[in-house]
Image 1 (cartoon, helix red, strand yellow):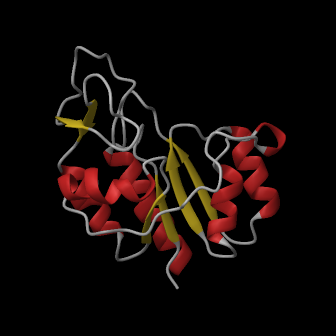
Image 2: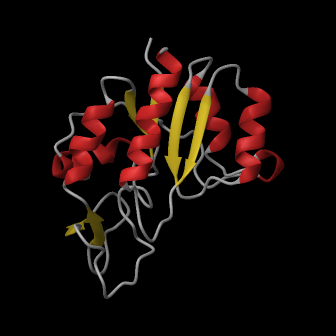
Length: 170
């Protein structure tokens, strides 16, 4: 069974932290109205068209899974714009709730979802506390990759994910 690649949207794929007046190089602007975004302007989302191909290239080594507050809506709003097929998603039981020992609220649910499977997780909210928590509780390899929300995923990130997948299968 392949390791999981758990993908957050806001930060890794949508560098929302970049200066509002300057779209990051290579990204295109999309206006979206996911559930809960009913008033005012649609949400501005920056996506890099090349990220879909990069993720699909990793799909030979990983099972791709949305690990985002967009949940299943990532399949409607994000995936099609990147050329991705429908992906499974983590259906968070509670969003933005309490988290153990100073960890990010998603971390406990990522571990539940992964079970005993190895995984890589890309998110802009991962900290040293999350790495420590996962390292103490997860029985398989786990790569927690913090992505700068001002920059998004970069070539070195994709290279590191590919190298990690090679390490897990050799």
